[in-house]
Image 1 (tube, rainbow, N blue to C red):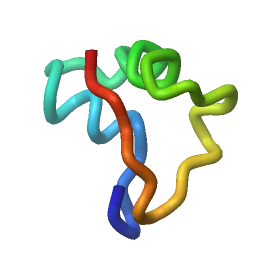
Image 2: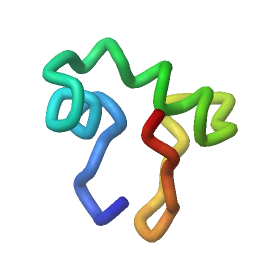
Image 3: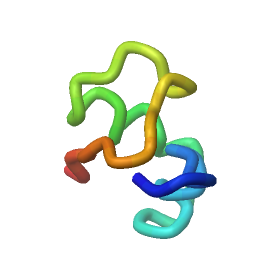
Image 4: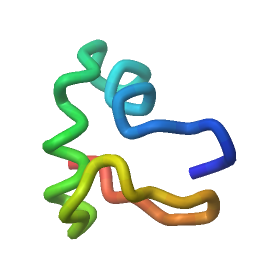
Length: 45
């Protein structure tokens, strides 16, 4: 994650669908899709 990134945007970039953000959140152990920080490492299933 870099400043300005959102899970929605990352899901759109990798899956073509922002609603897949929940899938990334679950794989990354995140409880709230809105609580992500620059430098955080995500798992993309």
